[in-house]
Length: 167
Length: 171
Image (cartoon, rainbow over all chains, first blue to last red; front, side, top):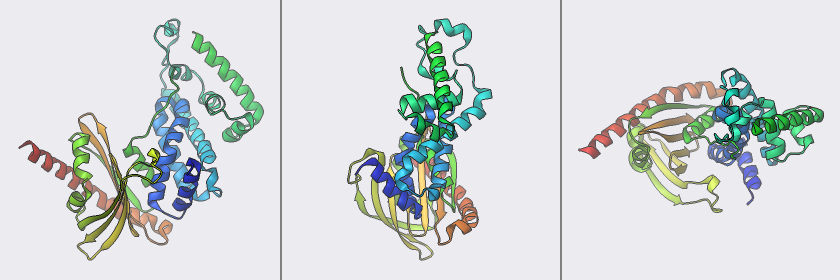
């Protein structure tokens, strides 16, 4: 059985109150949820993923089409990751201080350090478009913003990413 | 170049499960023993559940299914079927999922779970317990309150049992 078919069956059983189905659904979707949250929430990714999964499983009853579980879960995960990243932003240390930028290449700067210099919303649009491969329309729906906003946000995110990466 | 990724350990997952299920309670502690020791002990459900959950007189595993039919690792874990007998005349059939660091069990009226994750030479451990009854959503606050009074006691029994077994294994 396909993963989406498996998920659909588990959603239906979990919606009827089957605790084991809920646990198995958690097993099935947790890797995807953490993968969506990690590039956006960075060091707070585990908190974001935990909050997202709670929200997904608690509101499972409102999902009318169980086959849509992955798309719906992605929307919830991205929203939670942006929220957690924004609320933690004041405490977020600059992982790559300006003075160290010139040494970035020698220090083996990882993508995480560059992402930390982008806004959570920019990280979200980069992840959806360049990692998940979503089209503009779908990314706009996930982020609840107009397509034009996705386009401009992506342009700025890519430009900033390239600039930071080359430093 | 590595795109960031992470994973949730079993203890965090058990908290997710508890938050999503009405009428259950979850408690967490840190046990002063390594993960392999803790899980090696507690995953022997037939021997240990009657010791740590005082209402359970015996638990008999009647069927073991090593893997899911499709062998999908995302749904990893042994599937067990067990019958529990309690001191108050309780008899219940449980379906159980068991794998290292993770155990969830469900009967018609009860749900339980254990999760563990290594923390250096110690082990972070969580225990979930609760009841499932008709009209559960309405009764959830009451059921959670009842479960919340029971789970700390179970955690104490578990901590005592781990220490007792560790001392015995050293002597």
